[in-house]
Amino acid sequence: MASYAEAPEDEPSPEPSADEQRKAADAIRRCYMEANPEKVASGAVEVLLRKYRGQEAMLLQRVRYRYSLEIKKGRLRHRINSSWAAANVSLRADGRLSWSGPGGDGALDVRTCECEPARHEAKAAFVVAAREAGGTATVERAFAAADDQERDAWVAELRKTARFFERLEREKACQAEESEALEQAARASAATAEAEAAARREAEAEETAALAASAREFSQKRAAEGSAPLAALEAALDDALKSATEARGLEERRKFRRAHEAYRAAVSAYVAARRAVADLLPDARPERDVLDLIESGSRQCRAAADACR
Image (tube, rainbow, N blue to C red):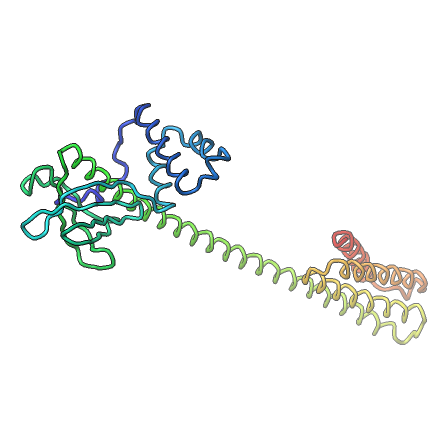
């Protein structure tokens, strides 16, 4: 028996006629009236139908599946061993084909099934091969309709149901792959951001260390002079470095208001350092690289303070 569920998904399907579209749209309205009448009353169903005009058959399948509605029911004959007995048969959108009658009750999981007409069995008969509901073994069940037209309608619905679930599984697989790709991209982005942040912290630490080393070197050279402006310069540079370091830590923890205040304190300390330099005698003033570091630190702290407002 050829499996319809294994047929190519992208087989060309005929364009639905206006009458078929109308019938499918009416069926969608009935589904919502049964499962979610509020959407009919609010007009949401009509908006949905306009959005999916020309795709009513696909939409009908999805609506039935969403609300686990019945697709088809009828009175068929069910083969039990070598005899046939009447049975009430129901096909639901969750993939359950069930029957009940004098010969007993049963159900199949037709989400993956094979279904073919079986003219050798009986008039208007068809055979369904699928797993028993709740089981793992595949079995064959034969049914017979009143005529060939009804039989073909049942076969078509069973095949459409199997194809629908095959498409659904592919969509789930694609969604899983997309989610995994997005997670990988997010992880890569986070790793890159962390690496960049670490590089910035390292550069800032090197700059701070260089400024501190220059300040210490300058302090050592001029220690013998013992002048008040020199002591004031050393204290101002120390305050500036401490305030800038504190501000960077607060900014990384996203405490922007306190970071703003710390950066402003660093700016004030750099201003005090410039005043101390101005008070020094010309021959006692520090080298140009220290002056440049003071100006650079002042500009950076002022800009950072503005950014943290």
